[in-house]
Length: 230
Image (cartoon, rainbow, N blue to C red; front, side):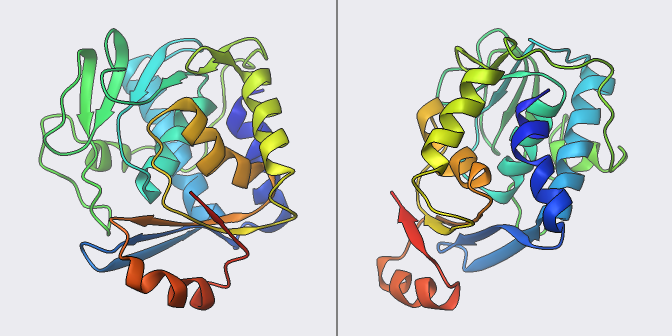
């Protein structure tokens, strides 16, 4: 099974309506909260889009060259769901089958799609626009074949290695943590520590972009945060 099926699907079965990610952009003054079910819809649309439009098969490389964001969460889970090998970080898009970049971003990949990172999920107007393109795809995803545990999933690590590392890190976070994080998902270790470990612990994430230090204490109280990452 894929990383998504192992670490994320159990959260849906337990309580699909619970928040999964609450994203603050302090520079823009925005707050967006997505439930587990809503993230699942984005992930399913992403997986269908990658497979059906761009022929991504298990083991193919998808470069996710985006900041930590609610859109990025759905993209990562969708890429893993269809069995892709995800690479992150500046310059990692070379030879990728699909690269997903922010507005103004570039990558040396077969297909380069732009994710707007708009708080309401609006498109960017790019020739290949992630938000606009995925909307026509289904909210459910059915893999054509199981993803092997040895299949590459994150950088040089296979599915089984990624899941084991996430569970090891998640065990240190406590049960169902509400984690406040400013960790950027720009390396495999950061994706594990700042995202997958929280999923493995059954928790939810309050992710802050362009953090305003003066707001963090009040935010911890308002969001009922139990721990802070980064």
